[in-house]
Image (cartoon, rainbow, N blue to C red; front, side, top):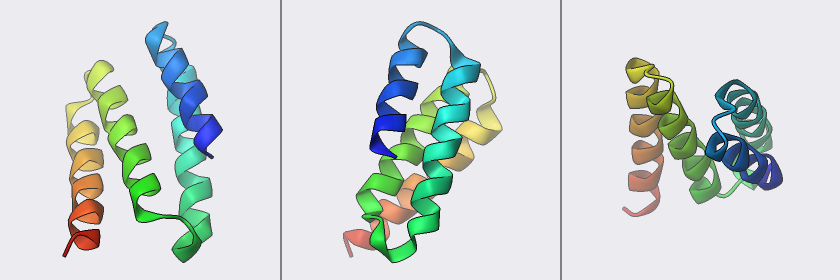
Length: 79
């Protein structure tokens, strides 16, 4: 799943946002499927990257929701 994130990041850099979105969503699905076996920081990082991509796509509601979920996960780890 981390490799999917890396590829999605590279695609974002060249403005292939739709392809990047598909890869981030695939990575997120895989990580969520791992449940407790997925480090929270990894899940949070994918959600944050997805939020940044939604921002690039001007889908601000989804960007905010992704960042809020990433923040909630990060906060739960650091309590």
